[in-house]
Image (cartoon, rainbow, N blue to C red):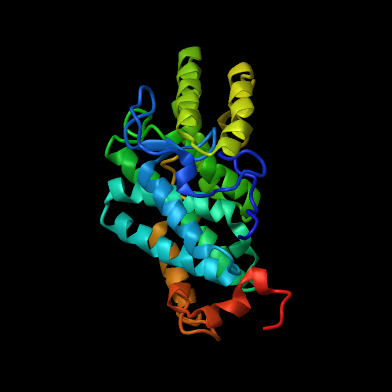
Length: 293
């Protein structure tokens, strides 16, 4: 499987996104909100968002950047369809899953079509801000309505800082929202977060994973960050009009560029690798790179 590029805040170093099975099944819960789970000690996520990220991971497994970029494109289009309909309840988990996937499997940013990569990141940022603003208009942009919101905002900022160096205004917006919402967190809030991590840890059935994660979570209970991530860096007013985040022209620019991009690969029956036979897949799989084709 491709090595994850980003050291994201929601996964310990060298602990990549793996099978959803390892993140625990449904159990009787005390403190983890219904419909939520974790993907690493610092990443609370909706179950729907986790499933979307996991499905994308499975589809991208063992393949090169262009196949990954095609998956990103399809998910971006799906997210856009929810945004234009103002279907924020469905848009939110798609944004979660997409953010996790594009961060952990950032090999798609290494495609030689730099123009497409740049526009993909730009349209991602515009869509992310559109979702956040839409939720705010519906009075749902808060921790009570969206228990995983801080994790998502952190993941958005981390993606920008790690894999998007093109003046990512959306990161400043996400950081600003987080600062507004979470700067006054209390010791009780931090204690609840720790209890949620510990409850999630109990759901992990893989013994090696549990052994690796236990000391990490224990250390998190002892160490309180002096300056949280959302108190570092520049922020931008979440309601300010910014051209790079104006979805309509950004989407038009993205679609115009895609019109000049081949709809299918130069080899193989389609971009959807599930349509390929084993023989057709072989030249593109990492495990056969050094073997005779």
